[in-house]
Length: 325
Ligand SMILES: NC(=O)c1ccc[n+]([C@@H]2O[C@H](COP(=O)([O-])OP(=O)(O)OC[C@H]3O[C@@H](n4cnc5c(N)ncnc54)[C@H](O)[C@@H]3O)[C@@H](O)[C@H]2O)c1
Image 1: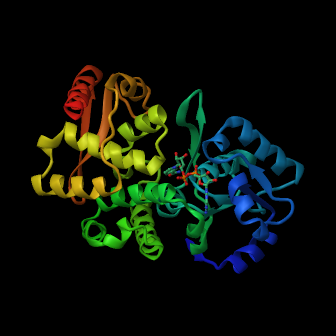
Image 2 (image 1 turned 180 degrees about the vertical axis):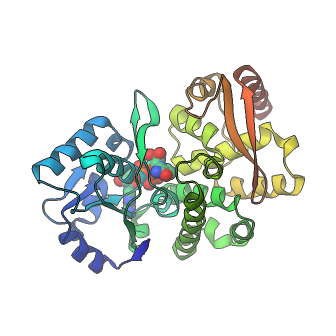
Image 3 (image 1 turned 90 degrees about the vertical axis):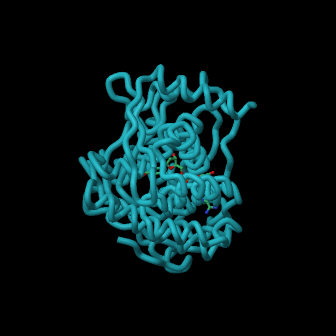
């Protein structure tokens, strides 16, 4: 469920909440809306640790929270993932509300109840499925995002468009999105989150069609870990690399249009296959020594790719060479 609020309404709501948790940067930017006893977490991925989860649990315990109370996370995907995870394990599951403040969290991570923290250098390996009771959306948060942060959200919007033929047409033709027009980005993010919600409703625990939302993520996560790209930008690059590696399986017209759409955001960077393969080897989706990904082949349609690590590496290395040439 999505609730739309102005900043004033959000402020009032936060002041009535049992525990409000946010990140240091958001707190600095929007200090006025937060209650005095707000719990402030480190910025971005630094929040996604078990140490921070422990801190949240201690705060919940010290304040005597129980399952009739609600914890509110105000932030991007990193804050939502961490607070959601802590909420999922305290008293075997506390109600929580997600207030997404980045374009990426608006269009993607605030929907679907995947919560997680990073562990021993690997992303999202400790987590749970725990839906927020609702999310509260406030458009004003987009005003303080950098172009890079907006691009990261746009990467996930493009990804979602590949899963829905109607939305694909809209995202392909709406040039304002690529000019980072906030109104257009907000509308597209809400639509992308609706599409995601419909997919998640059919497969909450990610056992079948929800996996489609992972297009671009196998290689994207490796790029993110190896080169520190923003998540949605890495996903957009990951989609392009996968599409080039397996281009013979993709409908020709779609391949060409998808290249244009993705390149408006970010082209394939130079990469080292050697470096990427070390992260790909640790991907939690791997099965029986195969690297696994879903490949978009036409708007609204994907196919699974399961390939032995050696073969995957050979294709990746070939693409690395082609890009250098
Ligand atoms: N749970 C899911 O389904 C899911 C889906 C996609 C991504 N993710 C996770 O989300 C995380 C990425 O999320 P993100 O892109 O929102 O990044 P983020 O949460 O790391 O935030 C990025 C930066 O933006 C700042 N920020 C947040 N809101 C701001 C605002 N309104 N104005 C200015 N700065 C602001 C943050 O302080 C941080 O420095 C990754 O950890 C990824 O794994 C989760």
